[in-house]
Image 1 (cartoon, rainbow, N blue to C red):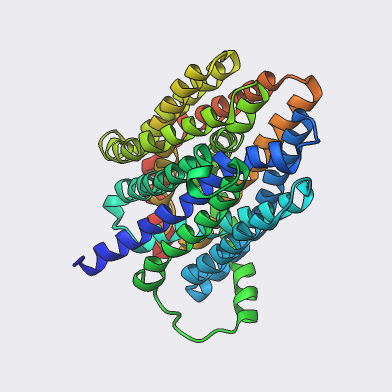
Image 2 (spheres, helix red, strand yellow):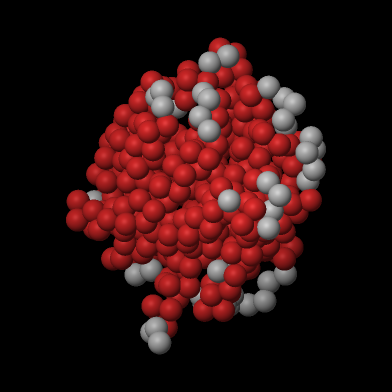
Length: 426
């Protein structure tokens, strides 16, 4: 039996095990080809890429608008877990509903996809904030990495099952691979719901000192949001890191969401592309753990810079890519750094913000991360549409990694920690 604190950590990490199924199966592996080859089969490849980019950007804009205010409200009511589970329910239900979309109903399908993505990303605002609740300060890097590692393994296991259905649909009782993809949406909804239960039952959040009405919480939250913004303006280290994060995580999220679509656009077979995503998941599991240990050893900032440098090389390489074996190699390399850059960014940020204001500060963190995800997919879509060249669209992402890495270089972590401690004591 786990000790109380250990049970909370494991239960928190298991949510990543569950919701990562949406990230890998829906965002990365199956929805892009389902949309391109089934829902929008009569639309040309460049235009369908544009609309998929618009859908991803729309979901991100919604989170940009909601995350900071909801984060402040969640802190006022000690309601991080409640908000997390509410957004998760939205994502689970709309993911399941995608099963009922027919061929050619691409707008309806994209609308459901936007709501499902909002549920996924909205829940992550409060999941990230709960890191401060379950993790001791001296273990932030490792426990953050543990969450991502569990996500890679859990998402990878479900993806492996869904890939088997896709590759051998008749053995699972389906007429074709399209039906198998639709069934994968059901598996994601069930998986996500099932592994949300440990967090529901075992992660404990401090209760509010007094019963506050929702209206009062909204007012308090909005006021607190304004105060938080003023704090961030004063915390120069936090502001600089957020600007750097805004840029480089844009590149990371864009590659996650648009990699399969890019592969399809340059003529690769969807089955090979999905196998490559599966490779990334299983490479990502030990790599995320390793990056957590690297963060403890050489510092989170250096670990992030290493990952950014690898991404720059990968993106340039993707421009010249000619065959599927190269795509597999890229999948392995991305798997080595993807979880690392995500987990170390989260733990680095947690180390330079006041612990008693975690949800509202992570509201800004997720707002900028998702606002970046507005620009990346849209940038790829617009560059591809204007130039009619999918390779130039992927190359455009390099500038985001370079700019983010340069800004991160100038972030002073030690100064940030001291300033956060001073604000926490006020």
